Length: 170
Image 1 (cartoon, rainbow, N blue to C red):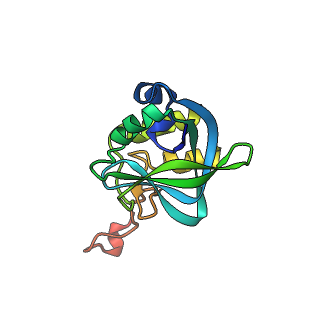
Image 2: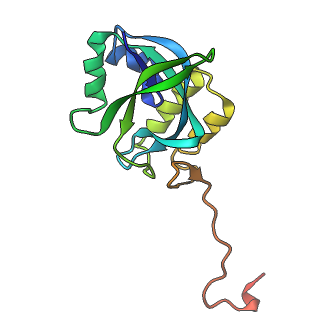
Image 3: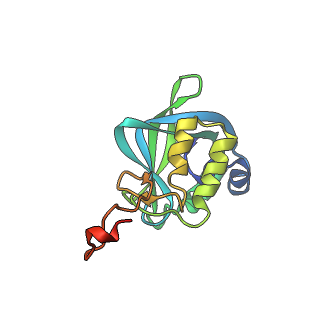
């Protein structure tokens, strides 16, 4: 049975049980040299980045469930492509796993409720706190998306109105 690295909504055990009922979670894993982004379509993807890592869940996918997973990830429409990448298991061993990579380059906004589902699953797997903070920054209402896939807090610029005078300051 192939291994599959989930980094988005497929980290959720209940959701995966519905999509791939014969598949089982193996445990936490890390996809090194990549970063988590949101595509313009509103879903998660990963991009190569030699300074970053993506945390997620490694699944042992039943062969009969691979087709269902491909359909869920919209392989046929080209939303995602399936590649094999080395991932690090929690105990440090490197294994090859299927990774679904989106066609988008990032900088998008997540669909309503999407990042909340990702965050819930990430917390249930007790992913590292610093990584949870990165993910929570992508949750709508906490800031503004950047090209790196992260969100910078929205800060109002400190600019006086165009026709302000020194008397306007109080």
